[in-house]
Image (tube, rainbow, N blue to C red; front, side, top):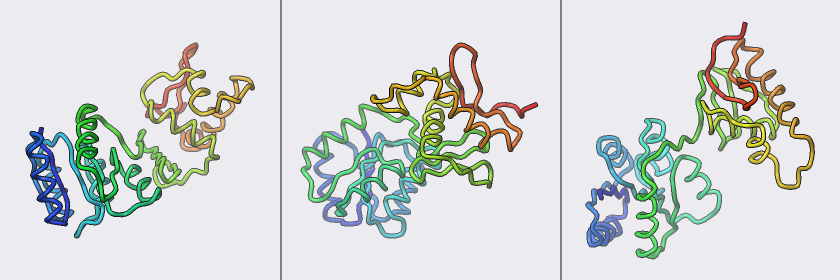
Length: 227
């Protein structure tokens, strides 16, 4: 398995390389963000260990740039910064796991192997459906350059459809993933929110992105313009 380590602390980078090599990994090193990005774009790595505080390009931006380029190498974010907002930023920019220094090498290696077992799969930080852009981390949605004002629940319904884009999603699935277990109202509440979303994201732009598949559910797709 080939691993990329992007760490500006050369002593720590060397220790990681020796330790991971001893575990059977082939390891490439980069000490700056731009070089790490270059290597990650040019080579097929099984995983990458990326420090947050890097010169030239920080780990958050490096990870985001990879995902924007459709590079889905699993990324383990490594940082001396500790806090839930830092962890959230790392994960929202496309990282797969997060370890705070000082760390246990045994635990880091186990996490790395777990990421490799999961493999490379598409995990976009934001979704594009035609010219509809949905950003779950920022809770923002726009059609082209037009920013769309959605309620929290409307956004949650749209985000779930976006995560399943191109698939037919049953009304019951939307209800299960967007409403909590205490909800005991009518399942047709989903139709109410779908109608509200269409009035905001489709009708004003003459498109038909949220499609109804009779007897089955809904599908989010960049469909033809509305008649």
